[in-house]
Every structure is written in structure tokens, then in C-alpha cells.
Length: 333
Ligand code: CA
Image (cartoon, rainbow, N blue to C red; front, top):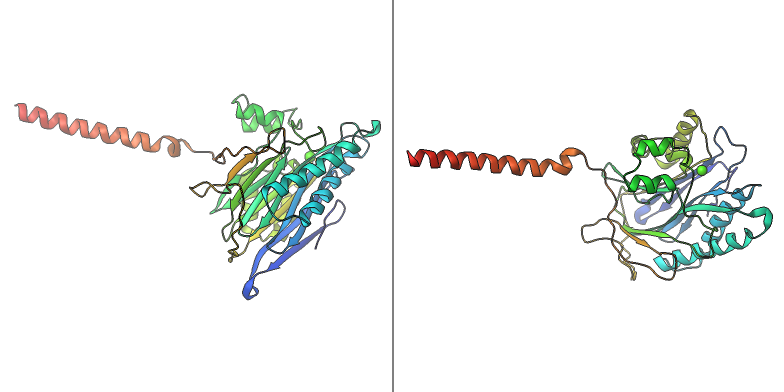
């Protein structure tokens, strides 16, 4: 078992599969960056029988309370998950326990405003469950394509979804750090859950905004595509620091090996849409109530991907019309 907290460098994890072929490779690293004295991020990676628990949390609050909040979240969630059967409900209960602990600790006058983002991947092969609060992120690199599995709970992300800001404007907006949902801010947590069935070669990246706010998706994608987890996390953090390191930086990379255990679980909730896409669930304000609306992850389509087939169809009809018109003209004369 390997725990990683601020100040600890990093550790690589390798889980043996059958025939000694590893099923999961992972590495986690957190760094204070260049501008901050403290590291309020916390990361964790823990081995479990069919995978592992991987977490990134980014704390906030004055008087060192951000540091306390992110470590409480990581500690509580790992604690609860280690004694739970993997399930979406178990993951929600772990988040609820962390929320409760941080909320109670934040009632002291000196700890007001304490809270944390928290993005966790619970790998229970062949399934992956992701829980998410705040603006840290989980990405999946599959077949060379980087898919952002989580939606940021932030002021700028809301504006981007409404079409009021572009991605680029959001990246540079002075309110880019304002988050709209955090663990420990309210008596009850609002948690997004994403579930999917993993495939050999899938790579997951969990990170805090100190990484995703500095490096473009294209760079994240290239780094995790071309490096095993251990050098990948080290290079990602170095790159973010080379770009100024304005915030604490955390990265967890989890790579699925060429073998994936077939260990079907009787999950109560759908983990995958019929087309093989990840399924997103939201707990709403009441964590007991899970809505099971299926939301496909947003993919950015290019102009030709979006309109290409329509244009092609119109051209075909145009051509057909032209030929028919000519035939008709010829048969009339
Ligand atoms: Ca941050």
C-alpha cells in the first residue's frame, strides 16, 4: 500500500496480473509549484485486490486549512473505501463521510471557508468508477483520444457551458479559481459519478487545476501517451513549473496493462451506455438520490466531423438532381 501526501515525492505502483503480466501501472506526484509556499493539494494511491484507489484533492481556506481539508478528504475516502465493496453507492458514502468530517472541522471560527475539490478513481477491474467534486479533473486517453470525464464545478466552466466564454477566455479569466462546489462547504455533498468498463491500454489522468490550468489538453495527452506513469507524472509537473508553476500541481497517471481481468460485478447502476461510452450520474443535492440520466462525455467535434456528412449528402442530392434534370431535358427533346 502506498499513501502519498504533500511533501512526499512520488511512488510507482505496479499490480501483478495473471501470468505475471501487470494489469495496472500507476504513479502519483504532487508539488507546491513555483509561487506558493504551501502545498494544499493531496494525492493518494492504494492497491486493492482488483485495481486501486487513486485520488487528487485541492484544498482551500486560509490559515493552512486548505492543506487540512485536502488531506482529510483523501484520508477519509481511502479509509471508507478500503472497507467497502466497490459500488457507486460505496463511493458516494465515502464522499459523504469526507464531506461531513470537513464540514464539522470547518465550523470553528478559524477554519471558516475550508473545503476541497476531490476527484477519485476507484478501479475495480474491469470497471472504473470516478467520483468528482470541484475543478480537479479526470481524463481518459483511449485510442489516442483524450476525453475529459469530469465537468468542472467552477464559475468559468458554467459560463463556457452556456456559451458565454471560450475555453481560452476561461483559462485566463480572473475568476478562473472560483469553484461552485466543494467537499466540506455544505452539510451535504453534490457528487458527480462516472462509470465505465476499462479496456487494455486505457490511461487515466487525475490532476489539479495547477496542471490542467497551465498545460493544454494536447500536451497532457502527448505526455501520458508517450511515457509510462512514473516519468509521465514527473514530466507533467516539470512542464507546469516551466510554465511558471502558479499553483500547486498534482498528477496521478494510471495505465491499464494489456490484460484486463474479467470479473463482472452486479452493480446496480449502468456503467456504460449501449454504445460503449462512459455513463455519468449525479447525486444531486441529496447524496441518497442518484439520478441515472445518461450523459455522453463531451467531445469537441471539428467542422467536418459535425457537418461533413450533411454536406456530402447535399452534394449527392445536388448531383442526382442535376443528372435527373438532364435526363428529363433529354427525354423531352
Ligand atoms: Ca489549485
